[in-house]
Image (cartoon, rainbow over all chains, first blue to last red; front, side, top):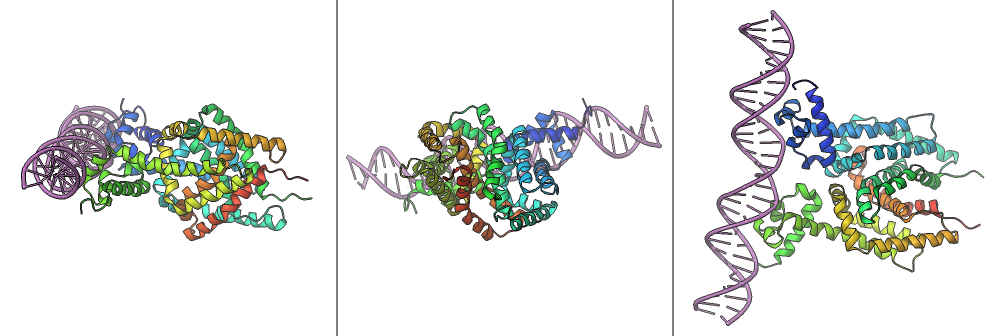
Length: 207
Length: 207
DNA sequence: TGTTTAATTAATCAATTGATTAAATCATTC
DNA sequence: GAATGATTTAATCAATTGATTAATTAAACA
C-alpha cells in the first residue's frame, strides 16, 4: 500500500472533494483522511493545519475562475461584445460542468470576504486587467458604439447573471417543484440570452 | 435583573444578531447567551435546541424577503414594467439597509438548499404567485408589448442583479481597493439601472 | 404565610475535533 | 546489512460545544 501513489496528492484530491462539498467548518480532518484512505496524522504531516490545506484548495479553485476572465479580457482580438459573449459562455459552461464550485467559492466569499479580496489585490494582475478593460469601454463610448457604463458595473452584471443562478439552482428546483434537468435546459439557453441581454442594454445601434 | 424584560425576546434578538453575523456553524450557544446577558441553559430552556433557534431566525429573515416580492407580484394595479421597477427598488434598498441579510440567507441557501426550497414549496403561496406572474407575462407577450420570456428566467435575472452585488460587496471593495462608500454609490445608481437593463431587454417599443 | 410552579444558575457530561507525540515501519545509502 | 532519515500508525491531549441536571431563587396562588 505504502507509496503506491503519491500520498500528498491523494490528500489534496480528498481535501478538494470534501471541502468543496461541505465547506471549511463542516469538514473535519478525519473526513479528509478517510476519503484519502490514510491516517489522519498524515494530513498534518504534509500540510501543517486544516487552514493551510483549505486555502490550497480554495486558491486553486479561485485561480481557475480569475484566470478565465483575465484571459478573455486581455485578448486584444476581441471587441467588447465578443468579450461579453465569451465570458458568459465560459462561465456558465464551467459552472455546469463543476456544479459544486459556485457554492464552494461563494461560501468562502461569505465567510471571509476580505481575505479573498486582499489576495486578488496583490497576487493577481487583476487590477491592471480591470483598468485596461475600463479604457476599452471608454474608447467604445467615445466611438459611439456603447452607452456609458463603468467597468465595475458591467462586470458585476455579467458575473451576477452567470453565478447567482448556479448558486440557487438546488433551492429553486425545490421551491417551484422543477426537475433539475429542466433547470439545466434553462441554464443552457442563458449562455446566449444573458449576453444578449447585457449587450442590448449597452449597445448603440448605428442608423 | 430578573424578568425586567422578556428573556425569550432577549434570546431571539441575540440569536438574530449572532447568527446573522456568523452563520449557523460558527455561532455557539455560549455566544448567544453572552450577547443576551443570560445563562446558557436559558437558551435551551426556551428553545429546545440550537437548530430550533436558528430556523426561527432564518425563517423570519426569509419570510421578509418572500413577502416583499409576493406583495409586488400580486398587486393588480402594476403592469409588468412597474413590477420590475418595484422589485428592484425594494430589494436593493432593503439590502442596503440590512447589509448582513444577503450573506446570512445565501449562507444557508448554500449550506442546505433543499430545506429552504421545500419550505417555500409548502408554507408559502409562492407557487400560485409564480403562476399568476407567468400568465401576466404571457398576456403581455400576446399583446406584443414584450418579448417572450419565462417567469423563472426573468425573476432569476432580477434577483441575481439585486442580490449578488450585495453579497460580493466586501470582497470587491478589497479586490479593487475601492471604498465601501463608493461602492454604495454604485449600488444606489443600480436601483434604476438594473430595472432599465431588464426592461430594455424585454420591452418591444411601438412604432 | 406557606406551597406550588416557573425561571435561573452553576456545574458537568459526552461527543467532536484539530493537533501532537512516540513508537513502528519502510526506503535509501554507505 | 546496518544505519540513517523519511513515512506511517495508533494513541492521546486539550479545547470546544450542544445539551442536561440538580440545586437555587423568584413569582403566583391558596
